[in-house]
Length: 159
Length: 450
Ligand SMILES: [Zn+2]
Image (cartoon, rainbow over all chains, first blue to last red):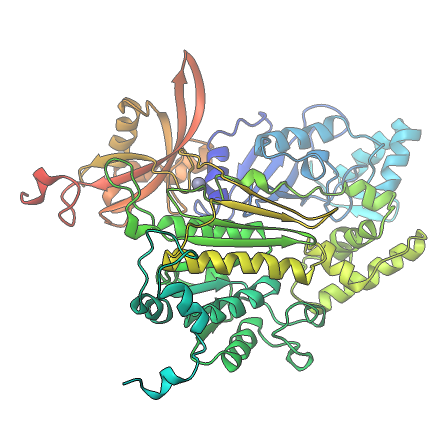
């Protein structure tokens, strides 16, 4: 990694992180591999209040030319996150620009939990329920977060 | 008088006409001579990075231009779809390493040339491997690989105390690139012309499809392929990551993409389109490779022989809607983190990391407060986030000289904040650290002393 300028640009980014209070960052590979890291997000409002959601970040060797790859490691019932952990967030793909940074992404992810939207669905069923029956959606989210089935799918406890 | 060889036309006759005599083909200041031709043959060592469409052309062109010591590095194996343009390969070569076959074919065809193949990733080689060559010629299709080679070549560059590049540390690069009907050829002289990173904006980021479009409303064959590659793969192969160089993986994605396309009534998913989309490759045009490679080989010959002024410094070729060729002289970013001189900081070997950080704060041209320090990919100290601060805190009391592996000089990168017009801004700087009294260098007062 020493010879990728992306590494230095990314470190500069990391050294200036300004995370929301309820987010924490860890580096499972130690202090010399910052290109992989994990961020836990604990929303304090909205449907997902009290849940703890872990995201993995893999930074590209041409960062910030290319967005990091982000996955949700916690199985979650969410219209914009599928059961494999793929995340539909515009700045991770079509709207990424080199002026954006890790901080922007973390805020974007936080926002997904406070305001899930049914218009860009990855989990089609969850999106339909959110749109048609917000009360049911709320109880589905609760059931998933406390550990239980929603339809065919089991969600481990994350609260 | 004449020996038998001079009675026959030599295979280098035309090269001789260029290099052995003055004339209107060569620059007025050019000093021709037989020595020069021999030097090119014997002493110039050229590395070709990539043995694909451009690499095949480059090896052929360079060998025919009189270069005798060539090496080529490429990690790929030959695929059937390469055969239309990677003309050194034949059907029976499919599956073999490109570098090895390309080297063998050119050596069979051009007598006297020696080509050493390296079938590996560019990152697998020691950095010093790259320092061994007179010129590095790039025939690559990825930004990532260019960025890597560029950083390696620029790492050999040293500046004198007046921030002028030291000539013998300059590692010239000749970079070719093609995408369909378009291509470029450029010369990078680290320290004088812009490096790859100075002009990274020339390579616009590739637009990526929104995941929800792939999942919900695919409209094109590429959407179907990306769905199979990015979403379906994970669903089926839990935990196993997709490897674009694994033909089985590619076939799986292709098959899934075809199913997806049938479901949505979309036409046009093919295996080669699948490869193209997944590996982000635009269909290759053989002639574009030939044109760009020819320009690169000629510039390489001019760089080595000095027979004529070289390209300054970026040629674009565009075969779409007519044919356009343009040369642009881009300028170097003097603050470039890769090729720029950075700020020279001379230190005693006893200076601790903490003291160094304090020095940066008072340094007249830097005035950098709360610095985090990185050396060759190692984080010596990070001010934030707290988990990293904690992991690196113990370094603060150690001498920087020791933390940097007791070298006499090297580059570090620092980030921190600086105050400009009463406004705090964050900044990232490259520093050239020189330790006084090590290897008898930098500080003459110290050289003979303690
Ligand atoms: Zn540069």
